[in-house]
Length: 257
Image (cartoon, rainbow, N blue to C red; front, side, top):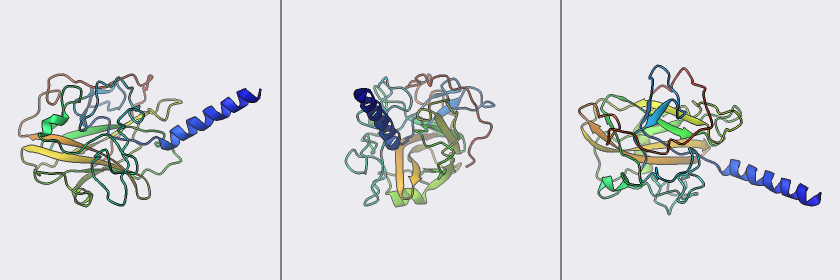
């Protein structure tokens, strides 16, 4: 009896620790709805056509599980330096490497996901896992999307990214999965500024969970003068659109820019 009680307590503590440590990241940075009139974030609602830098689409890990993968996609900034894109070294929680690659294309293709592409002035959508933080008891501090006004030769600092914010999205726009607040899919949409010239830009997704507790994801976006072919760099989507255990709810409103 004592063994069973101890085992149950151990499992409970493990689950609590997992929930406390579970934090979010941008799972897909070019999410396209199957039906724009019925927007949603579950796998039945759309497909992913673009990913963050060096995103492991061939990992086989289900949606929302890459915080347990190595290297983790969960990157928490350290306020002592606020490294804007995870370099695998800095941060309160070191994440996978999302710094600028040379050439930029090195971070995409093969075992990594496609680079996103869009026409200036068009709407793009980003998806992320709730990781137990889209519940009513938690404040929605929003997600900042930042993009430089011009093409840069290196990543901006965090203070520069902050000055380059183009949109604030609601973190808790989600399709709830009954009994699974960890893997619940969430997302929001923003408009690529119409004045952006054709070329490749760096973007940042930045979420504040608590006061001065920030999580980021970085990606490159190819801005074109023409409407990109379906699939961003390719004509078909690739990625880790793994089952979400039957999420079916669809919200009516997307976050405004």
